[in-house]
Length: 88
Length: 252
Figure 1: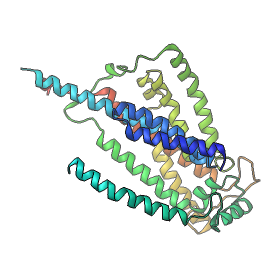
Figure 2 (figure 1 turned 30 degrees about the horizontal axis):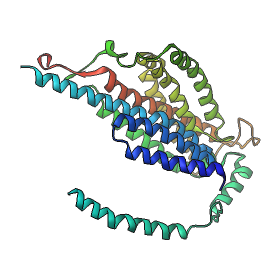
Figure 3 (figure 1 turned 180 degrees about the vertical axis):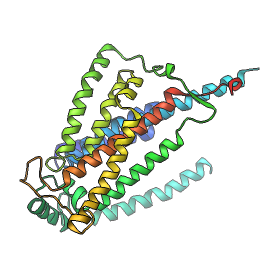
Figure 4 (figure 1 turned 45 degrees about the horizontal axis):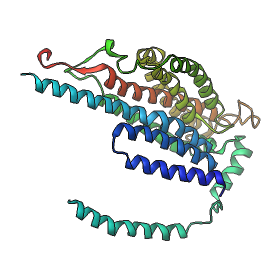
């Protein structure tokens, strides 16, 4: 095993742990993007450039973008509900 | 379940899982030592018979092209589900004036970067799709990069411009044409080579753009579908987050 592969494995372990331990959903989403990037390096270090190429887009834009949009929609709806309840 | 009970459950299940994993990993072949025959066969067959130099693409689009058809339609069906669930409902309105809200904080430098990124990503995506059978990449990877190109405009806080650059009718047709085209390429195999998804085009010279039989065509079909699929899903989610609002109580 090369140094690059060990570094990539450690980065993935740390990234995955960080995602699981984050409590704030917004921070968790950004960490998920960083975790995706660590996975890209892992796949690349283990000679799977095809998988790495897909993971670049899926892990760093594809999934976080969808989650961010969903989070925004949820907070928006909560604000609307609050406004409707506050009305006399 | 109380916190105490959950900790007890984990205290039993955690070490059990760890023990099973340790036993399993001890039975694996040594790191970096491949003992399968399948990989060796793929390496031999795809270069000598199909003149493809990227075996991952060759596996996806030639040897197991039929599996890829299934994957194609998994993606197709899930996109269909997302658009159905995220459509504009009866008590909702689309507010186009609100499109930039919350996105307009990007600096001039980021906006310039996004502008530079769009053409570069398009070029890279087309390159990856067309060179699928030659170098790492292929339809799926290239299609993703192509989808990321208009998505770069989100960085610039220009969501409505994304919808102009990648209009929904174009993305829907790209997805449909890609999915149908891939199935039709399989039919071509049935007609010209008597087996569904058997290669029916000449192999060409290894390393040249027009080589590896019908793999470049498969790659283009998948690229179109994946690009369309991801942009449809992204815009469906972003429409919900940025444009679609529930009507206030008195307007309903």
